[in-house]
Image (cartoon, rainbow, N blue to C red; front, side, top):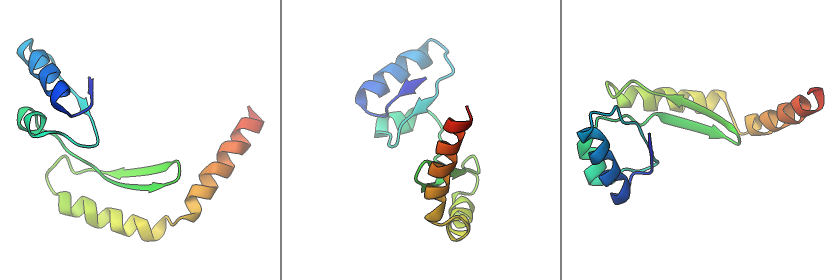
Length: 95
């Protein structure tokens, strides 16, 4: 696993791939060299505070993932950020 998608990550990924490693890159953005080395998918994400909902089609239909994210945006509004926070506090008390 390589954290980051810049030029340093590109060098690390190249070395790992040369050693026949199965490489996973975790980064919000990938430089051109990293993007050219390995297939990747970027899930459509919806964030409400500490709540993250991700939709992915493994690159087969990114537009559908975006449409589904938009649908979820109407279903899970900003109030869910507060709910997650409240549930988190309640969980601390229960533990």
